[in-house]
Image (cartoon, rainbow over all chains, first blue to last red):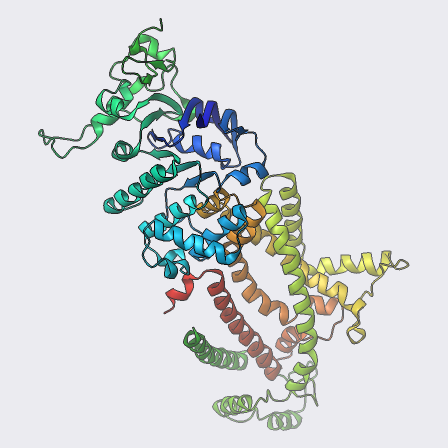
Length: 322
Length: 313
């Protein structure tokens, strides 16, 4: 049974110039113990999809569709139900550890308040559990760090604290939104390792949102590629890296810098600009940048369809559905 | 921490001395003097008066004498309120102004900050508009108008009801006599506090760590009080520092409207009368309060944001 099941999710933001469709008819699911990578450029809707699932959209955000977590539709659940799930069965790790911890509260209190809220633990018990968790995410001298303020820790340590916080209640699903983007490369590997361990030891499902294909390759089982608020390709991570189907995925993979690049020339890029969500092109949103453009791409939007490799791709190159 | 505190107090002393010195010489540079009345005074009388108050000494002598007396806690005699020393005048008026100011300050904080938070959390809704518009009204209506309106309502229109309040007078600080002046004194501060708190709270709940706190499943109320409030209070405290100094030293307008024997009126009367010692005394008092309040603000910053503590090492 899937842990999280998203069906036809739309996320829109009302602003003064009208509405922006950040996510459009997105469907996917995550299985127990699985890591699903979500890849896309800034503004592709990857973060908003899961902020919507967490009930953490900005106040002008509107949703439709369905996000089932167990028997609960997270989009329609009331605040109380959401609060009972968030931090307990449903945890989120954010991008920027420098600003994601409350600056005027000690690390310890920020950890224990999760246990007090969801487990009703006393201060002493919560303290022991929190310190044990800090040790588990390999924070040196956890007893001392427990009494420190966030600004006294490095970025890597802060992200470890964030992970410890997410793991405290043994969640069924962790949503990690760019967990390594703000960190040094060496620290990145350690953080990803921690997430992998959590996934394997606790059988936690992980959704890994990133723009870094390397991160996805190292950790994800399946990967979803998003463009302009839509899923354009979804499939097994090895398949997609070996034989990408969608032109956008191909473009992304071609852009990955390689050390063994013999040409020594310029870095490959995808020509054109990322789409303006307020004024999306008709048909396939990728068509203005697509090297394989056909006439129907300008007028008709391709649906997600199965491909010979077993993945799903939203492209007319996959032929007509039979 | 303590060395920081001691250092700040030590810096306050030369600041105060500079204020005293500048004020002393500026007063003497101003044309006119305490004995220039409309009716001309005979030269002999004037000479006697000047000798009596040592105004015929060289200026530097007067300045040194003033400083020496000040160190002994003596603000000198008043030039206008004969037979009163400045110390007596201040000792009579200051407690009244302090009490009223303190009550007004507490009232302003207790009303203004929660209203500001309520408006911020309901940003761009009817509740927010009502609170913000009322606050704006409170800011644009000067308190000499507000005072008259309050007197008209509670002193005149409601004269025969249980809501009747005295239109003025002090009556030795009876509770009923304090209500209107304290309210009138507090209103503009309520309004400012609403606006500042609203703005800073809107900013504070946008922080990334607020999203983290909500992702933990904490109830929103707790998120606001525990995670957002402290950072939202920093601009509020910044405003309250000097505001406290002003509100505690009494308001000339409010004390005049409600005939309250505070020290607010001395600020203006002293200056108009060229009552050198009185002006010096209220200036020193005001400056000392502002220095003290700025120190208090810095200490509160340390509590609100622990990072500050380390920047000061």
